[in-house]
Length: 157
Image (cartoon, rainbow, N blue to C red; front, side):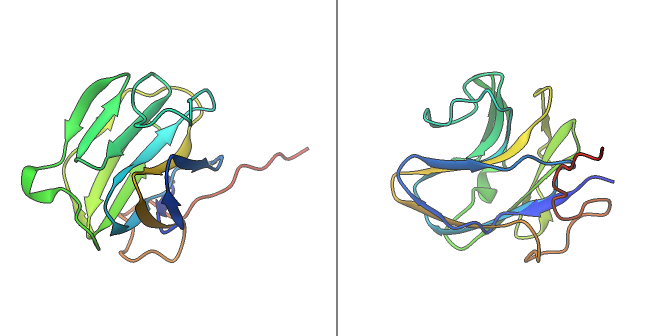
């Protein structure tokens, strides 16, 4: 079963990002409070978190604030023109170890993207005074069937 995470993590300011290792990838729901430069998606441990926007190399696959989805400096997909996230919108992200899917206010945007390989982690970045809330459980919208909250990786001896 794949995991879902909704992004409602308090990230704000200039050039900030974070990542958490996952066993399964959940849905992310991102509450956009103040629009600026931001992105959300998945990345490997090799990603350069100090170089935004992400999606410039093979180590990240992200939805950017303008509705484009980038991986390896190539636009892999784009949200419909009338579905670019605005202040107050909830952006959902699911990843099933192959495909990244995007949701806006609970609605599937039919905008799948793929291409990243290896172990990935959720990644969120902000710049230009963007303010986002990110939640990894207790989602605003019900996760799609087969997705759940993030399961953290554990080693069993």
